[in-house]
Image (cartoon, rainbow over all chains, first blue to last red; front, side, top):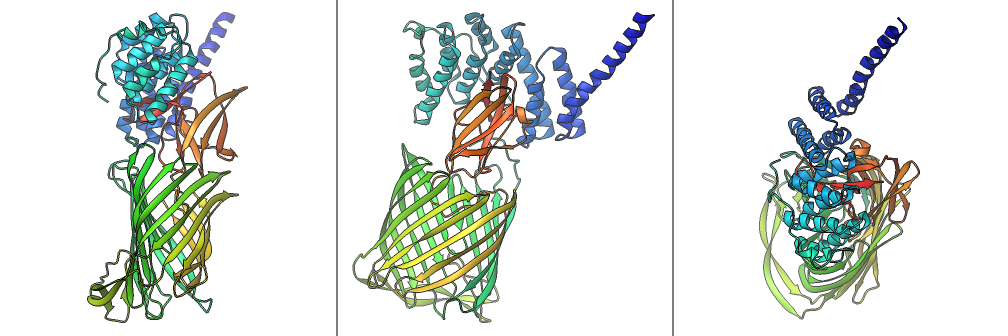
Length: 217
Length: 410
């Protein structure tokens, strides 16, 4: 009898706690987003949670849309697209990937880089976190570096054993060169040579598979 | 230019209401009201603003009305103030050098039956950073004084500097004597039917049913009046929440003592879009004749954002060097922003609410936030300008056809 009573209490607490968690998330959304739109987003977030995807970034995407004065439909679409990118990132990086890796990988996917690049990068750096290399890859694409050049640079540096600090410096120098008037592609190719561990032979390495176009927004 | 922030077809309109009590030779205060829109954000072009305005002047027996325009288009600022107007436009950038147009105009209400005005315009080249730089310029100055119009070549050298939160600029303008030439010409002049007259900053004059334009002969003499040089400087700084903005200098006319001029204003924003302002100064009507006027300015400004052009002639403040450092459970975010009046960030960790950074020392702004390790997206804005990825941070294409900053917090 006692175990039945405990089970009943536990189930009751769980049934109360679960909606409360959803409600808490809703409160972040409903303060800025109309109720119907917030409900649609909450539903999407619940589906992401069921897939074990990180959900806080999804709330961030929705609130960023409000900050950017996007329409409600656009915000819902952006959250849906971001879930797709997170899912693709998770699949490419493997189940052992951390949330930070999955989030930075989603940024790469949204930049138009083929998901197989994530898989190749994971294979090139199996034991260390890929968060920083992926952030740098997405950054280079956002700065106008052609997809193949950016992908090849990060892949070559990763395979050469570059550390997070090396990637950070690589990005920093490329940003400086672009600001000084260099073309993004030339700046990337030039600075890649200075990454520790990268040999002249590495520079001949072809980039992994790519899709040379960005997805439709 | 960042993308996708403003709604298409959305216009932001705000008004500047300035009440000015002006006194000539401190004899009597003759107040007038100047109602002037401060900004209309052009659809789809976030960095451009257009303004149109009009005003009434009751300070003289011949009451006057005028129209004013201002624009801030893709980095080119056209600032109009109570006493004069300025156009500073960057046309092209070649490497480290900016080439642009620099103009200043002053059109005065009729004074003792006579009209005074001047326009100085020319090309300029400048180089430097938001912290310091130099500029050189050359052009022409056209002046209208009783009985004549004058045109003379002019050259100037100047620069700007920002240090310890104070922005300053200065320039020396020289009007050169081009030689003696006399030219008879005609200029448009508006005659009011009811004793009033209308004047515009652009020189165009027309009010249907109240005035008409006639052409009058004027002797246009090139440089045969007097050589006039001007040394001018400006300072701007936030002091305990009040923005102090001042300009001053001297006119040096041949055969006369140096003629000082200056204006200082204090602006206090009482809300993000409302400010109170007050100021006082001396303006020189005609440096050769030695005509001066003292004035006080009191105003209420309603604007779409806090950025209002000041006297300091320097590039817009810009942020650089975003730095993140963990301090226990909190993360210190610091930004170096030369000459900034305010710095804000918004990101995943603030639920995309704007958080204002505090000025820690001179140009460094900081905020400490409780952040767990992870990847966060954020944007930054300076002086309530456009949200953009913080310089020095990574960025990524976001879901709204724009870019957003990304930081990895360990």
